[in-house]
Image 1 (cartoon, one colour):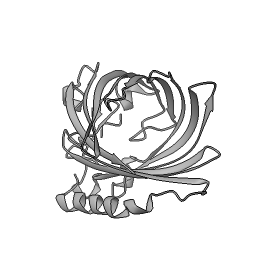
Image 2 (cartoon, helix red, strand yellow):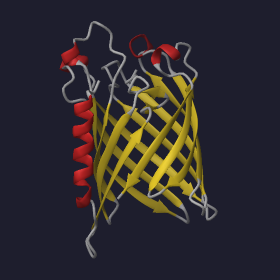
Image 3 (cartoon, helix red, strand yellow):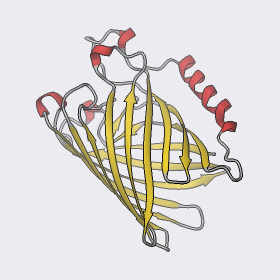
Image 4 (tube, helix red, strand yellow):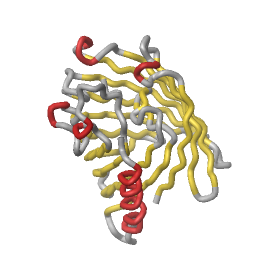
Length: 249
């Protein structure tokens, strides 16, 4: 199961790289490519219901480039801290996650959208014997109404999930509402199923909600997350509230 330390200096280096590189993420008039970037500070990096930072803060950011045909590629990074026991040497532990992806997005009808994506989750510096790196393939569908209501469904398939413990199937439904005032509300429910529960752990359902709102020139979100895992607390997968401050360029 992907139940995902970075030192202060490592965090500072990551933040500096992200912030100083942001000016390149600007599109030129008449250019078929659109460049964008994002940076965020969150009180807890929660991925599919499980804390990836042992309930600690994370600095995150990414860069994306999209072509007018619908093809895109990008990268995203965050510090991580997993519940690695004493069998993992300190020098082999993961302290950063870097994701790479390529995809294609399109539209259908009035308000409909669809897309496919192939991604790679990697953990530079982590011991290769831990088999943390893995690939995942995604399809997603969406629909937005004129009133600002957004519906979404996504399915992800990983031939070998985090830790090389067999295949994983992920499904998630989302419902969101955007308001002219800048406020937004989102709820989601997802499920992860594993091909080998003896290695990967129990299949589980996770769910959550978030309230988004502007603060000065930043986007803020107050989020809630929980899962139905019996051992949720020991996995940092129990109910939690966390705050995220982000900026897109």
